[in-house]
Image (tube, rainbow, N blue to C red; front, side, top):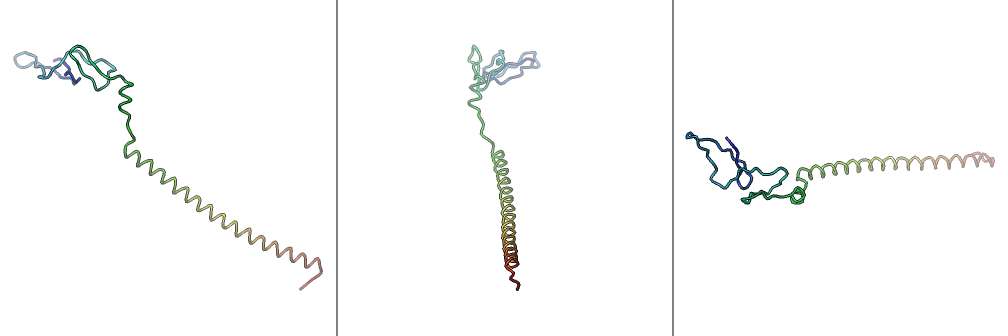
Length: 125
């Protein structure tokens, strides 16, 4: 048993048949393996392997985020938006309560000042 390589780089296992002869592929092949570090697409031109450099391969194989990644990002953003809206709603309620409390305190203060003024002037009702 031995390995040969089709011109497109596909390995092919060559085995002995019952007559003891190696059975080779019908397509063109070579016994020279593709060199380490070669990137697809590559091929054998009859003399040497011709392929793509790592840099060229990376430029041609930039992947966009998958739909699942995009869905996850959108879902996370929606969750953040809901939480922000909920927090704003709570803060708005607290603000309204504090505004009402301030109004009530102002009224109480005005009544106290009025009573003090009456006492100071000797006016008693």
